[in-house]
Length: 279
Image 1 (tube, rainbow, N blue to C red):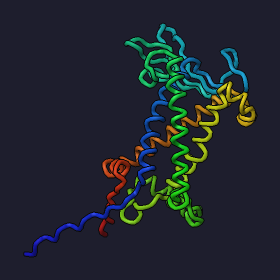
Image 2 (image 1 turned 30 degrees about the horizontal axis):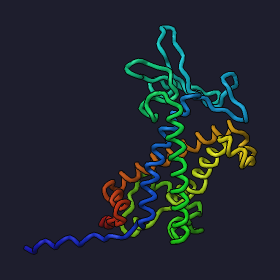
Image 3 (image 1 turned 90 degrees about the horizontal axis):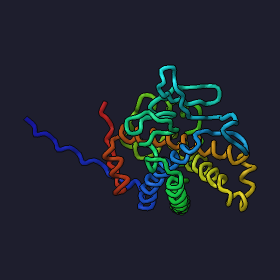
Image 4 (image 1 turned 180 degrees about the horizontal axis):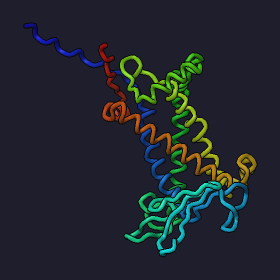
């Protein structure tokens, strides 16, 4: 009987540079604080408008509110345009100390958990500037070391409808890349990262600046670009929502591909390549 052959050692590649890893984890911290403190700020007036002005009597594009039903119970609702959804327990009305309370976002999703607009604004503004500085550092290193051109720029062949459709079908089947395929970003990943880095994040930053009276005085053209301070506030909320969707998909993909291997590569830089499955 032949002795069992020893398993071949798995290939390890250096996947993430030190600059990428540091800026990634700073982004995780900043975005988490910005989300929680941003919802604290939203709770002060959980209504979003289009245009320059917006107040309680004006029609809102998006709103989170609570009403009492016939039994006197508080029910929460989310309204987007003409559509209305009941979101009791989450948006519009949620429990605080065991009692249903009118709140745009629940206390466990705000920083601080209690109502404090001033504290929420301080947290938000400090981490917003840290987020911007960290983003500029990431962009600088990405351009200098060729990361965007080498790893994220899709080729003409990758952008062909046939190839895009094939990539979409792979994602729909929850395909996990192995071997050579796992060493590079697929087309949908590239497009998602590029849209996040060069569209969603700049829109979120610029709309945030547009809501500042000081920035309105220094850069008045921002009001024209985004159609007013209230429109900028709405776009700020929507871009943050788009980033949250990106984060959810990103985290799901991390666990699908192997959480320990993916997270370790973002800590140490080294990624273990899964071998191809034998036919």
